Image (cartoon, rainbow, N blue to C red; front, side):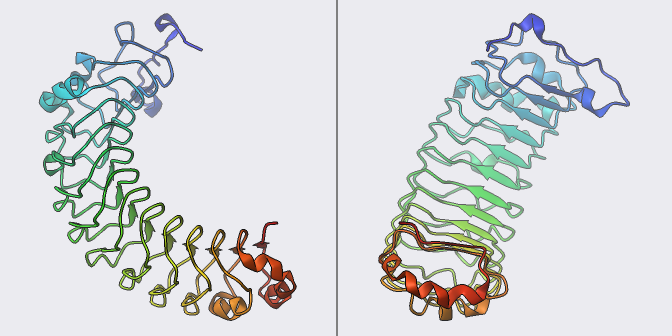
Length: 327
């Protein structure tokens, strides 16, 4: 339900009350901020889910601002152009432009303390412009765009999260300098071969819904805890024996015929094998013997092996909390 701007009440500023420095105008369906007070002491301004097509010039004077969200508005490249000259906002740490109408990475070079930058769900076709983004950046989100190449990110030595899912990527490249990367999200692209460029501290990787036919390429990721590879064309479980810290392994919706190479995964808790071509449960108990103390969930529904339900007793001694076979 749309609220009138007259009903918006900005909290009275109280230097002893941190909440008075935060203004949340989420879902007010505002076309502009003309009737909204913007206290100069604001540290957070959330304008999510409105109808803004331009940036109020008064934002340029919010010198204490740390977080600015314009998520889900009608912002275009021309509308965000003034950001590049708003020097009073130089201390901004989080900028969210998710779900707008951007076609390019905006010039945010003025924000040298930027830690979080989100331009997901736009119409961006290239990462050109990332080279100007602060090298202090820790989280970069560019999912659901039209990006075809990973580039201009080699200076992000502090980056911990990189989200490039739902783009047009065909090659994993230019990742080698992201030495502190913890999470890499590349689902729903067109990637055929795994190339992690030497990353060995990474903890979460998603390559769901790509064009992989092999699991090789993760051997050096010894710190990996979560690996998501569903909806590919993988026919063999391999290259996993070194991933001794793995807790979650999702290889559902592939072409697997057996469960292999996971005996060493003593920390494994969740194993997703549903929607494959596994013919028999014989050998499954042996495959997961290394994780008998941790494993709580195996999903096996929509495999031919559901015909052999009599074999389920061979897994009972693992005290699994959940073992789903489907119909």
